[in-house]
Image 1 (cartoon, one colour):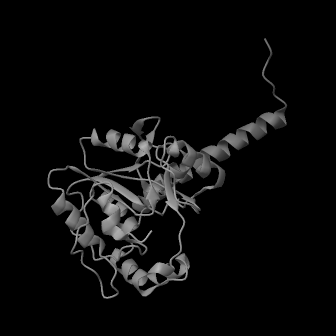
Image 2: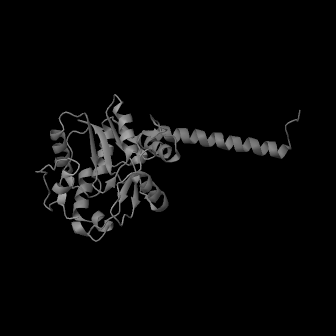
Image 3: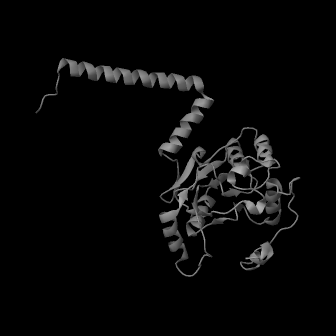
Length: 267
């Protein structure tokens, strides 16, 4: 502890970028952070944002590799696992397997709204509003905006175990996560988002069994129906009415069969 960002960055050969713009509260701005990344990585087509309290393993790199093969603009996100990490991690051989066992035993899967990493092609987003980093809404706005722009939104939750180290919020001046969500900066972020919000269930694609596929699980399908109903309410009502009529007809037919005492002949 006590190294600071410069000391930590020296170990893996990373670079600390200066000059990120801040708001009136001294909080870094998401738009400035992403702009700096674009400027400093002019040779790369794929960019990655990861929150500093997230631990990633080899499955993350494998998922990134799958997305890199796509020819369309995309953004890959995923849910995280919350874990109390009380001791310094031992990164000796087998550390990832040990961490996975800890997550399976004590970890809690976070809500689909918490987005702690983004993998995307350069130039996906145009102008990003001046969101405060580490406050609500900006991550959900990025995913919603990617959908509006027609990018493939890919949920890697089932393929990537992203581990979030639970921590105190006192170092940034808040009592707890609730205080962060009720702060003035959070209110400003929500105003900047203008109601645009999306989570992992809104993703039209997912990484399943080592491939990018259309997700067919209940959570994604339910959200798909919600979006369809919002965009095409009349058509949705018509389809729902037709489905309801078919269900009533089926129940009525079964009741008539039961009332008549008809049974299929045995051969």
